[in-house]
Image (cartoon, rainbow, N blue to C red):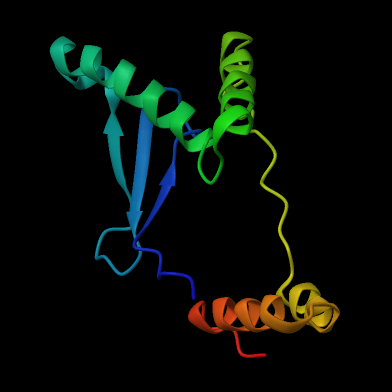
Length: 123
């Protein structure tokens, strides 16, 4: 189940401006201008933002796959492309898993059923 969204965020409207809208708030939008922050805070945000952007590209990945996703986003940033993203991990439909459960035998099948049950998937 997806969590309810608390904020919407727009980083593209104007360079250096972040516009936040609280979903159930009283104001329509709150606007924050990066250039108004003290230089010390701006300097700290650079590495923080870069780490966040690169880290997000590796979410749900590990090892070589994570390294490749990070490198792809870095390459895009170096070319001036903020929106470059590593492709999402392939998804496996639960129906595909449960449909193929019958192909398993004996203890392997029982182990698979227990694992699925522990994930809240009834078979």
